Amino acid sequence: MARDDDRTKGRPLTEEQLRMASDLAAAPSNAEESKIETFRRLRGRERWAFFREHFLGWSLLAVGIVALIVAIVVHMLILRRRCALRSW
Image 1 (cartoon, rainbow, N blue to C red):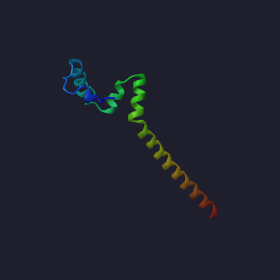
Image 2 (spheres, rainbow, N blue to C red):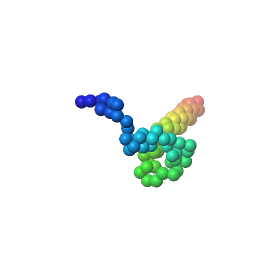
Image 3 (cartoon, rainbow, N blue to C red):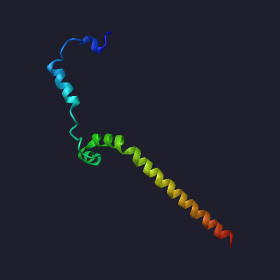
Image 4 (cartoon, one colour):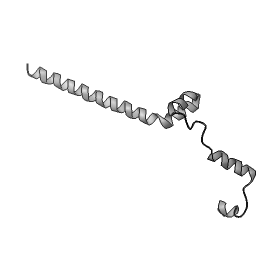
């Protein structure tokens, strides 16, 4: 099977191919927007897919860190209370 560059070697690109290549090379319409602005502009399934791709991992990490800090603080308070009860 011939590679793509072997099949088109020596032949110029068609108008449609040039247009498609130009469309692919153009900057996206939301290139200057922040992720939050883009997220607010989207609706429905697009919004959920964008959230999953750009925010879900960081959100889960933040929730995990907060849960760990709360667990450590609660553990320290329980240990302090137990030590105070033993000294009575």
